[in-house]
Image (cartoon, one colour):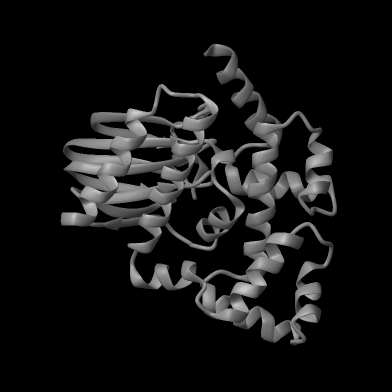
Length: 276
């Protein structure tokens, strides 16, 4: 993506789930330090996610990940339901399902399905001011159900990628989730599953649409981003814990993925906390 095109980088603090309903005429290019679900109730225009335009219309539902840049260019005012979900609400299993999908996570639903996801939103909205132990867990499960519902209704080619129906692929994904910080992980996967390295690379790309090296890098960077905004660990320690063999490699990959350096992501997050 052309960095000159980025007019705004929006960094928000999200310590609990937030919901709101907005009637807007559009918004500039931005990204978040939380996951965001959007439900288009009415309106028309373009939703541009990571540089790719998608038609925005009633019934569009989407999930924005930490590394998704998005912008809304509308032809008419649009009413949108928003849900902001803290990174620590989403378990690794769902994070990795989201990570494996290239492009924007967006689809259009209507009728009963649209009413289902709107009702999930209403439930979150109802409990939005309840922050005790019990209600926080209710909201967490509703938010995860909302994301899984969207994933279950995305386009068939995306659905095939995230469903992980192939038994061997599921086993590989589980292995990566448990061992993503290992050095020479690709070689370790090949050895663990008794297959050649080249076959492994071809197999993974064929069944997921993303290269194995890119997937591992995204898993590591997502983990690092979560540590940056949820812990006080040193950046060098986060780099090592996330599986990078050098701090410079980590910094370069992080800047390429998120558009900012790790210290800038953390400082912006802390700044937003102090302003609350």
